[in-house]
Image (cartoon, helix red, strand yellow):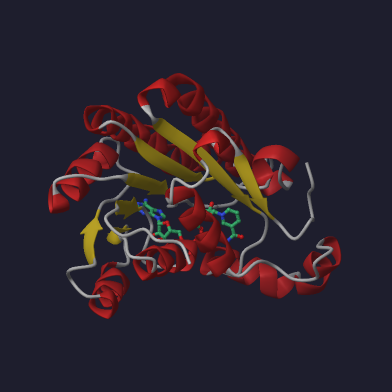
Length: 251
Ligand code: NAD
């Protein structure tokens, strides 16, 4: 069992899906967790109640709003006077294709890049500035298989945003390792959450056929991987991306 006792960790989008599973896993391993939420205030507060207020706190911020990410980091760090680990999990996956009207196309690209990449970069910036004052820290960014394999024509913006997350993570790892700031990415394929829900229901058979392991990943497997990276047990793995896709896309 990993021991995260003494670590204070911010998980964005921690109110549901992969984020909620990650919050529970990190807290179960001893960490104190800031549960960030966008719209899911009730869900986030229920998780805090479940874990206890000594173990978790809920903080809201709309990451589609430029500047909100920096405020979120500062509010999260104020809880225990520090953060040791940042987990950038919040993300959106709206659809749009070249056949849609240009304003819908532009809006979807802008929104997706803002939430999935620019807010992530803003949070990473705050984390780097914070960690360097404290002798180091760890960043774990949730990317996607789509960053490497590409995605369907209605999700090119999503794949591009996650490709950006990978490049950002690798750059941080290379640039800030001398200051003991470590950065990792995880790249899930399909994970059984609300984000994937409708698509998974409609295409269950096709998806299962495409995955040699025969099923989509449970969110707890992503959570376990994040917890391992957050533990600091694999410092020299900094810059790496861990794939969680049932061998559906082996790089
Ligand atoms: P989800 O939709 O269940 O959860 C997404 C989280 O992001 C929610 O907590 C939501 O509140 C938060 N969020 C979205 N927009 C926000 C905003 N504007 N401001 C603040 N918070 C906001 O999705 P999930 O499946 O748990 O996805 C979590 C991460 O994993 C995402 O980055 C996603 O891209 C990635 N991912 C998911 C899958 C999958 O199949 N589910 C696959 C690969 C990668």
